[in-house]
Length: 424
Image 1 (tube, rainbow, N blue to C red):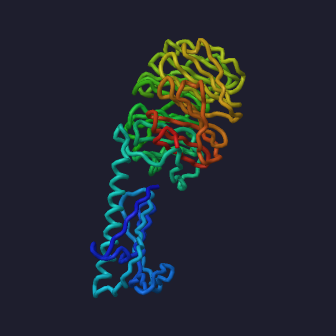
Image 2: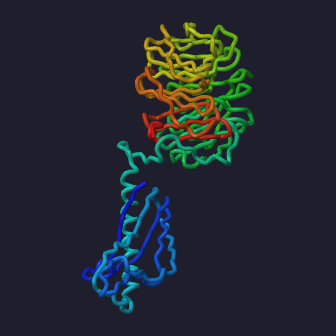
Image 3: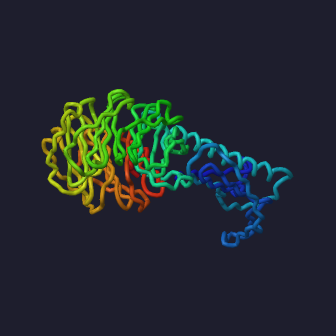
């Protein structure tokens, strides 16, 4: 909120109490301006020295004007009347002077409003040139899409794709302000999505579903996975090389953008929930009962790593071949700085279940989970701070494109956005 004070006298040489009431309040893009329809002034008997006997003229009826501005944030504008007693009786306004004074006051408020709008515009660009919205996490209107959302992927500050129940695919090209439904061609639940640029992406889901787009989702083409197992996670290192994981220890690999998918042996029968592929040959998958699997040879072999927990692990995020974070049920957060040779548990001060994690560098990361939980670290998880999501919906996934710009999705089609790293 920004406070501006403005007022105007009838004429510079007139006494200070010859002023006009004009008040304006701006909420968002609308400015409400109120002013009296006729003059109301102070009079004083020049024979009386007691200022308490000043008399104010009768209250004038008020007229309201409404102005719409293309882009403004919340401001409060107040046009005021500065009263100063005078030993001279105020003479009636001459014909036309009241209207002239009123217009002067109105123009002053409009000018102040436009200047504040320009200030909004100037301040609405971050150092990277991307427009930003409110501080903290803010919910965008997804009321038209009530299906549960399971995963979201951003390719830049504006473009993102979310997937969910009954074949739901949503696309934004304006940072989440609006979302467009895309035809997936399936009613199967979609639980994972990975884009390597604004156009090229892959979505996976129920009954072995794999979908591919090369035009930003204008069209999604079904690919043969060779399985009917539930597929829960997908990660691509580049346009051609990708991994998919799912139920019954399923691991699929492609080196040609999904034209062919090859099954790989995981050595486990539980569900693998998430996978992170940082290089064409280096990846990590996590799943039930504390399972962590690692490959450094493109999946020719997957090696089990000790997680130190039997809790289900639901999401994994690596920033390079060495530094990664895994989250799971019962507030589990694990961290490695040596490619998973050693995983260390991190304290986070909550008992919630975690379903999504995203790091954009070695230090800065975000975790989401049950009851609208959002945690943030800027020191590699040494300390985790809680952020307000203003929802109790379960959040299933989170994705950041840089330290500030991110989105989270979850139950009932909820979509949360931030352009400040979640900071208020």
